[in-house]
Length: 441
Ligand code: HAM
Image (cartoon, rainbow, N blue to C red; front, side, top):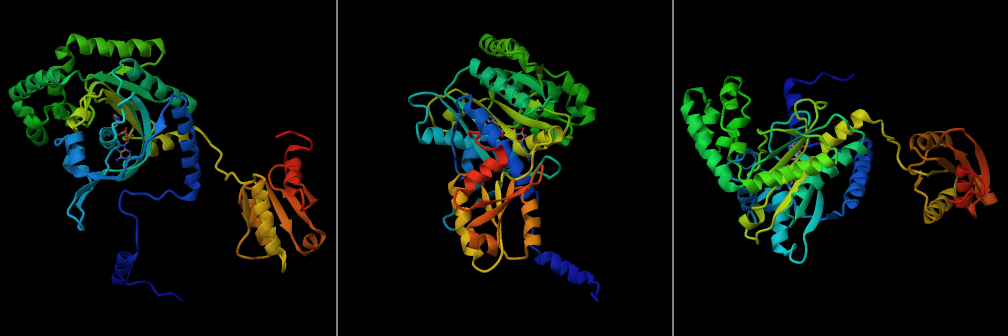
């Protein structure tokens, strides 16, 4: 009989039980297959637009993100996993996004020296946010960057490319919001006008807004505070401060989107949470995922590479939150979640295990994906494993088969049938059994 634990015992147990870090999730094998399939789909799509893989380190100098993303952004102010390397005193940060790291690599390797580059990267990023559905402290992004292109054609190409992805994935409920952030002098003039306006309405500003009034007045426009909404709605708009070139760029993007039949909502409030953007910014949003409905965000960052010490290099890109994209995908599709396995080899009796081992290798030589049963057990329990493995056939090897130089093959999916074949030429026999005799592969 087991005794109930005292509260002290249960607390002590909890303290010693090792858990993943809050907001950082394991991807278990049942989900792993969906991640793999998603990655295959994404890589095919990226290749069809000429994008090539780039990989940058997960750790970068903290100063890269401070300079790149901006000191007065949520990410840099409160969301970075930063630490001092106690072995040499270096200040390091787990990347909270890819763009700054890719910009650093572009400068370090003079990547755009001969020609502009279309690159992508995929992997974990880290932000110390309050975890909830769709918001994690370690999450995954697919990041895409077009380096050395001034647009507006490339801006439109990236957006059209995304619209194709949603279509191919069967996602209908995603809307596109776009905005033009203009250039630095235009934003400066707008910023001055905003400060003047907010100062004139100082009695309506909450603490957060007061704090941001001079450091980042633009972020006040993002406020969720209902008592500030009317005042914020009447604030001067950036569009009133845009010059002819910015307007022409924005119109160029919109014209190409119209030509491609991509629908968009112009949202003058869309500012994005990172400081490096200019001209075109965009987000793709769904209502199907609750409050964290932005599955993709991006924009142009023509000044970033220069700010980080490189030559002036126009660039634009976006990142997709892969947890959110996968959740949305699984909501509208019922993708196949069985493993891509052809053969499960069942073996019993002395001497058969050695032959089963080499037979499994021969089948793999022939191109089959094969699991060799391990861990013993009777035929019945092994066949149960074979059934649960998702394999197309079980190859069964007992004493009799071993002596006769044969193997029994049982079809596990669809109409069940079993036949005995010579071990020599077994791969061809299995192929014939599955796909019919004489058919070419
Ligand atoms: P971002 O908007 O900060 O942009 O992030 C891109 C996407 O990452 C979001 O739209 C969302 O889907 C996902 N995401 C962000 N935070 C979380 C979180 N805590 N948990 C789960 N998913 C999250 C960037 O990161 C820019 N670097 C994009 C870019 C590339 N701009 C130009 N090039």
